[in-house]
Each structure stands twice: as C-alpha cells, then as structure tokens.
Image (cartoon, rainbow, N blue to C red; front, side, top):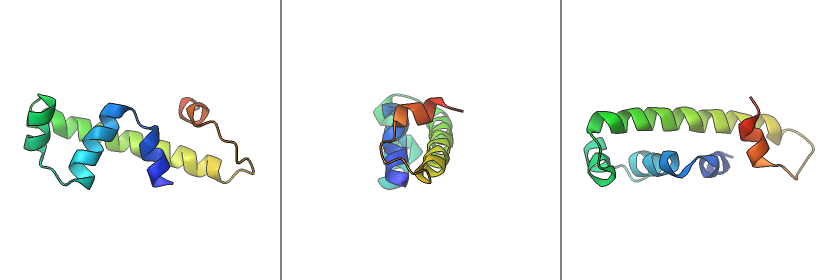
Length: 79
C-alpha cells in the first residue's frame, strides 16, 4: 500500500523522498543535484512526506471497499 502511495506522488516529491529516505542521501547532496539550498531540500522533504501520508491514508480508506477497479486519480482529487 505504501509503494502504491509513493507511485501516486508527483515526480518531484517521489524523487526527493527516494533520495533522502530510501537512498539515505544527505540534504546537502540532494541540494547539489536539484540545484537548491539545503534548507529548500528540507522543506521539499517535509512537503513530500505530507503528500505521501495523505495519499497513503486515502488509499487505505479506499482499499477497504469491495471495488478492485480503483481509479487512483479520483482518490487523490477527492478530499
């Protein structure tokens, strides 16, 4: 379920989370790759984690339905 939520994120959020949390890169390294300051990376990671949390809980709620034909775009847009 977490992997599906990660896939639902936009490319920038997914990239920042993969580099920081899965690859264990330091914020300074990520900043060098993205061309931004370390503090900007911290903000990006914070926002990406928030987006991941929202996507995860929306999926978790929808996962408990009887429907196996889930429209993930609809899930993210419904709030």
